[in-house]
Structures are given as C-alpha cells and as structure tokens.
Image (cartoon, rainbow over all chains, first blue to last red; front, side, top):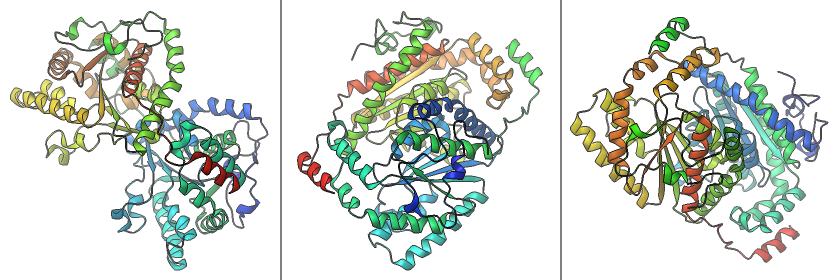
Length: 284
Length: 284
C-alpha cells in the first residue's frame, strides 16, 4: 500500500470496518487521516487523476495478454449521500472502455423470480475492467431488512451467500472495494431541501425519499448488521464520512488507487521484435 | 444549431458529407471553420465541459419522465486515429450513468451466425442515454469490402440495411451522429512508430496493424463508398480531420453539443407540490 499524498494515514486503514466496528461511532463530518483543507482536498483529487488513469490502463493492458485481475467498487449509501458525485468526479479519470458501470434499481419481475444474486452475477467486471456498482446485492439485506420484505432467517442466509459470492470473486482475480458513504440525517435533510429549492434538481426528488428517510434508524441498524456480517479480510467494508463531499471523493479515490497499486500491475512485455517492427513500420 | 464558440462555422456544417463528397479532398491537417491555435482549442475543450454535462443530465432527466430522446455517436477511423482520445477527453464530461459505451471487436462465432446488425441492435442506447460506438456496423462494409469477406452484392445489401436501421433509430427518438476521424497515411506511420518507441504502448501494437495499413488506399475507397451510400439527411456523416488531435476533439465535442442542443431538452417539471414537500422535508 503506497502512502496517500496528503493523508497522514491511508484511508484503507483508517476507514476499514474491523471486528467490533460500530457505525454509530463514525462521525459523518470527520476527515479521518486527512489534515488538509477543502481546497487542499480538491487539488489532491485533480492531482491524482493521472495516476488513476495510468494504473487503470495497465490493468486493462494486462488483460489483453491473459491477465485476470479486475476491480469491483461497490457503493452503498443513503439517498443524497453522493454516490453520483463519486462516479462523476473520481471515475472520470478512467477510460470508459475499461469501466463497467451498473446502477441497480428496484428489481424487475423477472429478476425477482431468481435468487437475489442472479442479476448481480451478470454484471460482475470482466478481466481488466473496473466494475462500479451504484447500489448492489446489499440492497437485499438493507431495504429488505428494514421493510421486512425478507424474514430474519432469509437475511442471514443472504449474508452467508454474499460472503461466498465475494470470496469467489476475490479468488478469481477481483479486488473488491466496498464503500459505504456515511452522511448524517440532518445533512440528508439539508440536501433534500436544496433539491427542492432548485428546479433543475426536481427530477431527482420523489415522495419516496421522505418515506425511506422515516426509517433512518432502521437503516443504520441494517448497515451495522450487514457490515458486521460481511466485512471480511478478502472484501472489507470501508465507511467513508460523507458530509463533506470533497473528503468522500478523495477518500474513495485513494481506496481505488490503493486497490490498483496492490494488484502490482506491469505493462505487458512486447511479444514481438520491437526493432524489426520499427524497421517494417518505417518502410511501410 | 447554436454558434460554436471559437468556430467561425459550426462543424456540423463544415464537416458534413453532402452529395458529391470526396474523401480525397479532405485535408487531414486542416481545421475547417476554426481559426484558433492549439492552446485556444484545448481551452475551448475544457470550457465546454460544463455545457455538455448539463445537456446530458437534462437528456437523462427527461427520460425518467417518459422522454424518448437519445444520442448515438458512431466513431469510425483507421487505427491510431484517436477514437480512444475522443472517448477519454470528450466523453469524460458526461455522467457514466448516462453513457452506453461499446467497443465492437471482431465478431464472435455466435455473432457471425446472425445478420450483421444483430449484435449492433443489442447495443443501441436506451431512452435518455448517450450511446458511443467505437467501431460499429460500418466494419461490415469497410474491412469486409477491403478483404472481400463479402461479395459486392452483399455489401450493397448492407448499405440499404444500414440506412433502414438508422432511419428506424432516428424515427424512435435517436439523434445519430456519425464521425469518421480522418488521418493521413504518413500520420499513422508516425503514430505507430511512437507506439513502438514507448514500452507503455507496446500492448496497443500488433503485427496486424501493418497488415491493415498495407490496404490503406482500399480502405479510403471503402470509406468513400460507405459515406456516399449512407450519409443521409437523418443520419449524415461528418469527416473530421484528425492529424491534429486537439482539433478532432473540439470538433466532435461541438458535434455532440449541437446534437444535444437540437433535441430542445428541458428540465422535467415537478409532478409534486414543491412547497408542501419542502414543508414535509423540513419537519422530517
């Protein structure tokens, strides 16, 4: 793991949910391991873009020569927490050709007729790709628990199934990066009000937003349980304080940079005689 | 069509392939309609990002409320012409959630067992999306003609089928933007040599590159014929001089901006009582 420039401690350490983790102890306003200002953070975000671009290109390039490595970034959060901003501001540095982005909405009737992992399996990243899940199979242990759409026994079965599924992903070359963006209830209220005050954002608002908001404490309990049950050594959770959008963005960027660095990527060696090809190209 | 800032004439006019178009008359070094320098062009590219972001968000937003509009950008070019750079530098301003990117490679055995448009149909953009094809169904009238993988009669059938297919896309709400990035043979040689001189680019090089290059003139004839047969009023071709990468990028950016502007997009009107929701949110 490389040093994260500007960070005293790497987010993959400070934000990781370990044994005994308590969501209620995470301050959504905090900037763990980072002592810079908002302006420092924004500058850092821009500075790191080139590194991200190069590492992703190496990942993609390796796969063209048989490499099996890949990344899966899973983003979970309460509404308005900034998943979209992460995708826009962190993922923008990556080549779209190497990114598989999937936003999971409410399942269709067909999807509901299968096991909950059926639709997920179809969207896992291919070798060389960076997969990004905006919501994921975790909805099946979050809203399903909060709304009692599944029994407690079924929720327990799903935790186990998720761990087995993610182990399989890990064993076949996928680095799984699980991120919960954590905002406070008060911050969500302010962001919903801001949406209502901006006609260009009305399309993002629905009555359902307030309905889900009423279950805030139940959601926090569901997140706590899901993180406890599925933050494994192979696929740990990172809980990112997200009241400060700029911090959430640099933290997730560093988590991605760290994951890519951990893959020890190398440019593929030429499988042809460079000097001879150069000669042929020059004469062509 | 809005004025393109910095352009004397809009690329959708200057670069459009009209009746009597001759590819051989297009200078790959030219910057038609643009009198600025490289630095001006790079500044323009960055300046226009916000406009692209907002228009794309409107397109996406409209579709959430029943809008059927969408964009399909088709990129065709000789190898090294800079399709990847367009995707990285122009599309980066867009929200990945609203972009459907597809790079068409050599067809699989299964794909070959169907009509050539079968695999294309599956990748057309959904309502609200910006689809980007890196190569496309045009390969079936380009390399297939050059290598004589299809008879002249079959190639003719395909031109007709393509026009019918694109008319259907247009009639169902898709603005089709077809772009050929046009480089010179000499420029391609220099770019291939540059790849060979940079170990980080060796993975992009293959022996096949020189083999295709040997058919340069046949490719130009195949492009000429394809453009003649398929540059329709509904889905015209634009031939973008691409020896100067910075020009190709601003030209394609303007073509996209123009296409989005032509769609007359509006933010969806709130279907709820904003004041009441504000009251409820404030009390939540």
